[in-house]
Length: 320
View (tube, rainbow, N blue to C red):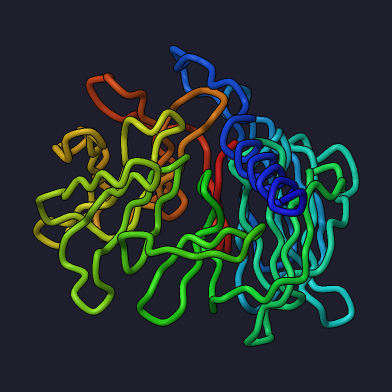
Protein backbone atom coordinates (compact mmCIF):
# COMPACT_ATOMS: atom_id res chain seq x y z
CA UNK A 1 0.00 0.00 0.00
CA UNK A 2 2.87 2.36 0.81
CA UNK A 3 4.39 1.76 -2.64
CA UNK A 4 1.04 2.44 -4.35
CA UNK A 5 0.64 5.65 -2.39
CA UNK A 6 4.17 6.75 -3.33
CA UNK A 7 3.61 6.08 -7.04
CA UNK A 8 0.30 7.94 -6.94
CA UNK A 9 1.99 10.89 -5.28
CA UNK A 10 4.75 10.98 -7.93
CA UNK A 11 2.25 10.82 -10.78
CA UNK A 12 0.26 13.69 -9.32
CA UNK A 13 3.38 15.75 -8.67
CA UNK A 14 4.83 15.39 -12.16
CA UNK A 15 1.63 15.72 -14.19
CA UNK A 16 -0.03 18.43 -12.14
CA UNK A 17 3.20 20.40 -12.25
CA UNK A 18 3.23 20.10 -16.04
CA UNK A 19 -0.32 21.28 -16.29
CA UNK A 20 -0.53 24.12 -13.80
CA UNK A 21 2.80 25.89 -13.52
CA UNK A 22 2.45 27.79 -16.78
CA UNK A 23 3.68 31.35 -17.09
CA UNK A 24 0.96 33.98 -16.71
CA UNK A 25 -0.29 35.12 -20.10
CA UNK A 26 -0.12 38.84 -20.67
CA UNK A 27 -2.95 40.76 -22.31
CA UNK A 28 -2.64 41.30 -26.05
CA UNK A 29 -0.57 44.43 -26.69
CA UNK A 30 -1.73 47.30 -28.90
CA UNK A 31 1.33 47.10 -31.16
CA UNK A 32 3.25 44.01 -32.30
CA UNK A 33 5.85 42.88 -29.81
CA UNK A 34 7.96 39.79 -29.34
CA UNK A 35 11.20 38.25 -30.57
CA UNK A 36 11.47 36.58 -33.98
CA UNK A 37 13.99 33.74 -33.95
CA UNK A 38 15.41 31.75 -36.85
CA UNK A 39 18.28 29.44 -37.79
CA UNK A 40 20.29 29.57 -41.01
CA UNK A 41 22.33 26.87 -42.71
CA UNK A 42 25.58 28.67 -41.88
CA UNK A 43 24.95 27.63 -38.25
CA UNK A 44 23.82 31.02 -37.03
CA UNK A 45 20.98 31.73 -34.62
CA UNK A 46 19.34 35.15 -35.00
CA UNK A 47 16.89 36.97 -32.73
CA UNK A 48 15.05 40.14 -33.85
CA UNK A 49 13.20 42.37 -31.40
CA UNK A 50 9.94 43.21 -33.19
CA UNK A 51 9.37 46.58 -31.48
CA UNK A 52 12.85 48.02 -32.06
CA UNK A 53 14.06 45.98 -35.02
CA UNK A 54 17.31 45.23 -33.18
CA UNK A 55 18.97 42.08 -34.50
CA UNK A 56 21.40 39.84 -32.60
CA UNK A 57 23.21 36.84 -34.12
CA UNK A 58 25.22 34.09 -32.50
CA UNK A 59 27.10 31.20 -34.09
CA UNK A 60 26.04 27.76 -32.84
CA UNK A 61 26.98 24.11 -33.29
CA UNK A 62 26.07 22.48 -36.60
CA UNK A 63 22.36 21.77 -37.02
CA UNK A 64 21.45 18.04 -36.90
CA UNK A 65 20.33 16.41 -40.15
CA UNK A 66 17.08 15.20 -38.55
CA UNK A 67 15.65 18.65 -37.92
CA UNK A 68 16.05 22.28 -36.99
CA UNK A 69 13.32 22.60 -34.36
CA UNK A 70 13.20 25.80 -32.35
CA UNK A 71 11.10 26.37 -29.25
CA UNK A 72 10.74 29.31 -26.88
CA UNK A 73 9.94 28.66 -23.22
CA UNK A 74 10.81 30.47 -20.00
CA UNK A 75 12.43 33.35 -21.89
CA UNK A 76 14.87 30.94 -23.56
CA UNK A 77 15.32 29.45 -27.02
CA UNK A 78 15.69 25.67 -27.02
CA UNK A 79 17.42 24.15 -30.05
CA UNK A 80 19.70 21.27 -31.01
CA UNK A 81 23.18 20.92 -32.46
CA UNK A 82 25.71 18.18 -33.07
CA UNK A 83 28.63 17.42 -30.74
CA UNK A 84 30.93 14.52 -31.67
CA UNK A 85 28.21 13.04 -33.87
CA UNK A 86 25.47 13.16 -31.21
CA UNK A 87 22.32 15.30 -31.31
CA UNK A 88 22.60 17.66 -28.33
CA UNK A 89 19.95 20.02 -26.95
CA UNK A 90 20.85 23.54 -25.80
CA UNK A 91 19.09 26.53 -24.27
CA UNK A 92 20.01 30.18 -24.57
CA UNK A 93 18.27 33.42 -23.43
CA UNK A 94 16.14 35.16 -26.06
CA UNK A 95 18.57 38.07 -25.86
CA UNK A 96 21.43 35.79 -27.04
CA UNK A 97 23.66 37.57 -24.53
CA UNK A 98 25.11 34.38 -23.03
CA UNK A 99 26.66 31.22 -24.37
CA UNK A 100 24.24 28.31 -24.99
CA UNK A 101 23.77 25.94 -22.05
CA UNK A 102 24.05 22.25 -22.88
CA UNK A 103 21.01 20.29 -21.61
CA UNK A 104 22.01 16.86 -22.92
CA UNK A 105 21.80 14.43 -25.83
CA UNK A 106 18.38 13.42 -27.14
CA UNK A 107 16.52 11.66 -29.91
CA UNK A 108 13.71 14.22 -29.64
CA UNK A 109 12.85 17.26 -27.52
CA UNK A 110 9.60 19.19 -26.97
CA UNK A 111 8.50 21.93 -24.56
CA UNK A 112 6.88 20.82 -21.33
CA UNK A 113 3.50 22.25 -20.41
CA UNK A 114 5.34 23.88 -17.53
CA UNK A 115 6.88 27.13 -18.72
CA UNK A 116 10.67 27.06 -18.64
CA UNK A 117 10.94 23.28 -18.95
CA UNK A 118 11.59 20.89 -21.82
CA UNK A 119 11.28 17.12 -22.32
CA UNK A 120 14.23 15.18 -23.77
CA UNK A 121 13.68 11.62 -25.04
CA UNK A 122 16.19 9.01 -26.14
CA UNK A 123 19.82 9.62 -26.90
CA UNK A 124 20.25 10.50 -30.59
CA UNK A 125 17.91 11.29 -33.48
CA UNK A 126 19.72 8.89 -35.83
CA UNK A 127 18.66 5.92 -33.69
CA UNK A 128 15.36 4.19 -34.37
CA UNK A 129 14.61 3.31 -30.72
CA UNK A 130 14.12 5.82 -27.93
CA UNK A 131 14.99 4.78 -24.37
CA UNK A 132 14.71 7.10 -21.39
CA UNK A 133 13.01 10.47 -20.84
CA UNK A 134 13.83 13.44 -18.67
CA UNK A 135 12.21 16.77 -18.00
CA UNK A 136 14.64 19.65 -17.46
CA UNK A 137 14.53 23.35 -16.80
CA UNK A 138 16.13 25.68 -19.32
CA UNK A 139 18.72 26.27 -16.61
CA UNK A 140 19.79 22.62 -16.72
CA UNK A 141 18.06 21.23 -13.61
CA UNK A 142 16.55 17.76 -14.02
CA UNK A 143 12.98 17.72 -12.65
CA UNK A 144 12.08 14.17 -13.69
CA UNK A 145 13.98 11.24 -15.21
CA UNK A 146 13.58 7.53 -15.87
CA UNK A 147 14.89 4.90 -18.28
CA UNK A 148 11.59 3.63 -19.69
CA UNK A 149 11.58 2.82 -23.41
CA UNK A 150 9.43 5.36 -25.26
CA UNK A 151 6.69 3.40 -27.12
CA UNK A 152 6.96 5.52 -30.25
CA UNK A 153 8.94 6.60 -33.28
CA UNK A 154 8.23 10.28 -32.70
CA UNK A 155 7.52 12.55 -29.72
CA UNK A 156 5.01 15.09 -31.01
CA UNK A 157 4.59 17.28 -27.92
CA UNK A 158 3.34 17.45 -24.35
CA UNK A 159 -0.10 17.84 -22.76
CA UNK A 160 -1.00 17.93 -19.05
CA UNK A 161 -1.65 14.15 -19.07
CA UNK A 162 1.73 13.18 -20.54
CA UNK A 163 3.69 13.10 -23.79
CA UNK A 164 2.00 12.89 -27.18
CA UNK A 165 3.80 10.14 -29.09
CA UNK A 166 3.35 8.58 -32.51
CA UNK A 167 4.11 5.20 -34.04
CA UNK A 168 3.06 4.63 -37.63
CA UNK A 169 -0.53 5.83 -38.02
CA UNK A 170 -1.27 5.67 -34.28
CA UNK A 171 -0.89 8.58 -31.89
CA UNK A 172 -1.11 8.15 -28.12
CA UNK A 173 -0.77 10.05 -24.88
CA UNK A 174 1.94 8.29 -22.88
CA UNK A 175 2.47 8.81 -19.15
CA UNK A 176 6.27 8.74 -18.58
CA UNK A 177 5.77 8.11 -14.86
CA UNK A 178 3.61 4.97 -15.04
CA UNK A 179 4.26 3.89 -18.62
CA UNK A 180 0.50 3.78 -19.35
CA UNK A 181 -0.76 4.97 -22.74
CA UNK A 182 -4.15 5.78 -24.25
CA UNK A 183 -5.41 6.95 -27.61
CA UNK A 184 -5.10 10.65 -28.37
CA UNK A 185 -8.19 10.83 -30.57
CA UNK A 186 -6.15 11.81 -33.64
CA UNK A 187 -3.91 10.02 -36.09
CA UNK A 188 -1.54 12.98 -36.24
CA UNK A 189 -1.28 16.39 -34.58
CA UNK A 190 0.58 19.50 -35.69
CA UNK A 191 -0.74 22.00 -33.15
CA UNK A 192 -0.55 21.60 -29.35
CA UNK A 193 -1.47 24.06 -26.60
CA UNK A 194 -2.31 22.95 -23.07
CA UNK A 195 -4.79 20.05 -23.49
CA UNK A 196 -5.66 21.00 -27.08
CA UNK A 197 -4.51 19.11 -30.17
CA UNK A 198 -5.20 19.96 -33.81
CA UNK A 199 -4.71 17.49 -36.62
CA UNK A 200 -6.17 14.60 -38.58
CA UNK A 201 -8.39 11.84 -37.22
CA UNK A 202 -6.88 9.38 -39.71
CA UNK A 203 -3.44 9.77 -41.27
CA UNK A 204 -4.41 7.95 -44.47
CA UNK A 205 -7.52 10.12 -44.94
CA UNK A 206 -6.41 13.53 -43.74
CA UNK A 207 -9.10 15.65 -45.36
CA UNK A 208 -10.66 17.45 -42.40
CA UNK A 209 -9.04 19.41 -39.61
CA UNK A 210 -10.13 18.37 -36.10
CA UNK A 211 -9.49 19.87 -32.66
CA UNK A 212 -9.41 17.56 -29.63
CA UNK A 213 -9.37 18.47 -25.93
CA UNK A 214 -7.35 15.68 -24.32
CA UNK A 215 -8.64 16.55 -20.86
CA UNK A 216 -12.38 16.46 -21.54
CA UNK A 217 -12.36 14.32 -24.69
CA UNK A 218 -14.34 16.98 -26.57
CA UNK A 219 -13.86 16.92 -30.36
CA UNK A 220 -14.48 19.92 -32.61
CA UNK A 221 -14.51 19.29 -36.40
CA UNK A 222 -13.39 22.24 -38.51
CA UNK A 223 -15.19 22.42 -41.88
CA UNK A 224 -13.65 24.05 -44.91
CA UNK A 225 -10.60 23.62 -47.11
CA UNK A 226 -7.89 24.36 -44.57
CA UNK A 227 -4.34 23.08 -44.56
CA UNK A 228 -3.29 20.42 -42.05
CA UNK A 229 -0.80 22.67 -40.29
CA UNK A 230 -1.08 25.54 -37.82
CA UNK A 231 -0.61 26.87 -34.31
CA UNK A 232 -2.86 27.62 -31.32
CA UNK A 233 -2.89 31.04 -29.69
CA UNK A 234 -1.37 31.14 -26.17
CA UNK A 235 -4.84 31.16 -24.56
CA UNK A 236 -6.09 28.32 -26.78
CA UNK A 237 -8.96 30.42 -28.13
CA UNK A 238 -7.72 30.48 -31.73
CA UNK A 239 -5.99 28.24 -34.21
CA UNK A 240 -4.13 29.92 -37.06
CA UNK A 241 -3.61 27.79 -40.15
CA UNK A 242 -2.93 28.14 -43.86
CA UNK A 243 -5.78 28.15 -46.39
CA UNK A 244 -5.44 27.85 -50.15
CA UNK A 245 -7.78 29.22 -52.80
CA UNK A 246 -7.12 29.66 -56.53
CA UNK A 247 -3.52 28.53 -55.99
CA UNK A 248 -2.91 31.37 -53.56
CA UNK A 249 -2.21 31.05 -49.82
CA UNK A 250 -3.82 33.00 -47.02
CA UNK A 251 -4.14 32.48 -43.25
CA UNK A 252 -7.36 31.38 -41.57
CA UNK A 253 -8.30 31.92 -37.93
CA UNK A 254 -10.35 29.13 -36.34
CA UNK A 255 -12.49 29.57 -33.23
CA UNK A 256 -11.49 26.50 -31.20
CA UNK A 257 -14.78 26.38 -29.30
CA UNK A 258 -17.02 26.19 -32.38
CA UNK A 259 -14.77 25.24 -35.30
CA UNK A 260 -15.89 28.32 -37.27
CA UNK A 261 -13.16 29.89 -39.37
CA UNK A 262 -12.51 33.06 -41.33
CA UNK A 263 -9.73 34.38 -43.53
CA UNK A 264 -7.58 37.12 -41.98
CA UNK A 265 -7.73 40.19 -44.26
CA UNK A 266 -4.28 41.21 -45.45
CA UNK A 267 -2.81 37.73 -44.86
CA UNK A 268 -2.42 36.76 -48.52
CA UNK A 269 1.05 35.33 -49.21
CA UNK A 270 0.59 34.35 -52.88
CA UNK A 271 2.39 31.16 -53.88
CA UNK A 272 4.50 31.15 -50.71
CA UNK A 273 3.28 28.88 -47.91
CA UNK A 274 2.64 30.92 -44.72
CA UNK A 275 4.51 29.78 -41.61
CA UNK A 276 2.52 30.91 -38.54
CA UNK A 277 3.65 31.45 -34.94
CA UNK A 278 2.13 33.21 -31.91
CA UNK A 279 4.02 35.36 -29.42
CA UNK A 280 3.34 34.48 -25.77
CA UNK A 281 4.58 37.86 -24.61
CA UNK A 282 2.29 39.99 -26.81
CA UNK A 283 -0.49 37.66 -28.01
CA UNK A 284 0.12 38.66 -31.66
CA UNK A 285 0.17 36.23 -34.57
CA UNK A 286 3.23 36.38 -36.84
CA UNK A 287 3.17 35.09 -40.41
CA UNK A 288 6.36 34.35 -42.28
CA UNK A 289 6.08 34.27 -46.09
CA UNK A 290 9.49 33.83 -47.64
CA UNK A 291 11.46 36.88 -46.53
CA UNK A 292 8.40 38.89 -45.50
CA UNK A 293 6.84 38.91 -42.03
CA UNK A 294 3.23 39.91 -41.32
CA UNK A 295 1.65 40.48 -37.91
CA UNK A 296 -1.97 40.27 -36.78
CA UNK A 297 -3.68 41.23 -33.55
CA UNK A 298 -6.84 39.15 -32.85
CA UNK A 299 -9.83 41.42 -33.42
CA UNK A 300 -7.97 43.82 -35.73
CA UNK A 301 -9.35 44.67 -39.18
CA UNK A 302 -6.38 43.19 -41.06
CA UNK A 303 -2.81 41.92 -40.82
CA UNK A 304 0.04 44.38 -41.23
CA UNK A 305 3.39 44.02 -42.94
CA UNK A 306 6.43 44.49 -40.70
CA UNK A 307 9.67 46.24 -41.77
CA UNK A 308 11.55 43.02 -40.98
CA UNK A 309 13.16 40.56 -43.38
CA UNK A 310 14.28 37.00 -42.72
CA UNK A 311 16.40 34.89 -45.09
CA UNK A 312 14.47 32.67 -47.48
CA UNK A 313 16.80 29.80 -46.54
CA UNK A 314 16.08 30.04 -42.81
CA UNK A 315 15.82 26.48 -41.46
CA UNK A 316 13.76 27.15 -38.37
CA UNK A 317 11.38 29.92 -37.36
CA UNK A 318 9.63 30.75 -34.10
CA UNK A 319 8.53 33.75 -32.01
CA UNK A 320 8.99 34.47 -28.32
